[in-house]
Amino acid sequence: MKPTTEAASPRIRLPAEWEPQDGVMLTWPHAGTDWAPMLDAAVACFAAIVREIVKRERCLIVCRDAAEVRRALPDLHAELLICELETDDTWARDHGPISVFEDGRPCLLDFTFNGWGMKFAAARDNLITRELYRRGFFQPQVAYRNQLHRVLEGGAIESDGQGTLLTTETCLLSANRNDHYSKAELEAFFKEAFGLDRILWLRHGYLAGDDTDSHIDTLARLCDVRTITYVQSDDPTDEHDDALRRMEEELRAFRTADGSPYTLIPLPMADPVHDPEDGHRLPATYANFLILNGTVLVPIYASPKDALALERLAGAFPGREVIGIDCRPLIRQHGSLHCVTMHIPVGFL
Image (cartoon, rainbow, N blue to C red; front, side, top):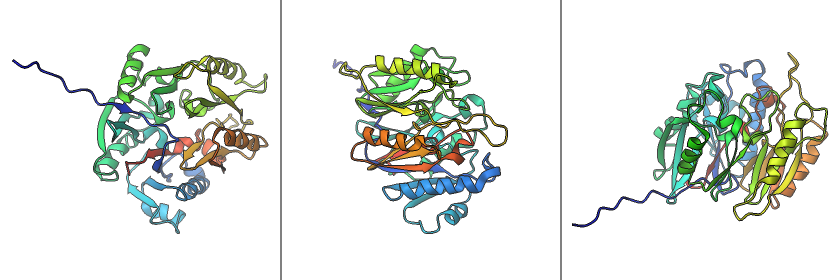
């Protein structure tokens, strides 16, 4: 009798953001979102981001009304893919698809988005990934994997494309996400889902005004397999100083897959920006940049520190153009440039 053999599990790889892209997804603001009191400013900021994206790759826009998008971008047609859906909000990084390769085949992972631990309505946003897939916005060879038994936002994870994930404990282990699982159980699950060899967990670091429980994309970012940029405090009187210094110590202790220290490139802590209505501090950060084909888009805030942030990121991404986008409207709703976008690797759109 011949022995039975089980089929080998597919080799899964979570690509890095700096790898070649087909496009970027955004979810458009409308009057039914929290952007309503400042909708014109939000739309102008989204339009500025889209205009930079389409110089380099496609742009997939999810919106309530395609006419609203076309009014804001009247000269752009062929460069845009538009899908009309009802939406709760605009944070595509967190409700958009997470793209992996299974034995080289492109595959969308659809995790539950629950409004950052049930803080905000998210039922309609949580349907976006499967609706985009169902409506044919991805190539026929793209597979879909239902991972809705786990809560995960794209802004919570950074991949080097070679088996290392960078994340924060305060987000992934927070209440109302996956708190019924232990850290060990979550680590085992994400290693399997993303084909990881290891996870680098940060315990420290936060931004005042942040709703995400310290998404990694607001604090520290992988720029290549050996380089991490991160927010550094230079003011002992700032409320973030202790947490950011402790985060910096953790980053210094991390090692690359071959055992070497990471090259660390500090980004300035953004000058305080306060909400004009009630005065609370907004989560301005230069770490919330978006990597595109040949380019890095960087959030700026009309601050003297903008130039230093752009200079540091130009050093982190040699050979890429570095462009600042005024994101003061975006931080009014407690996010920034990376938060409103989701990159889509080559082979998907």
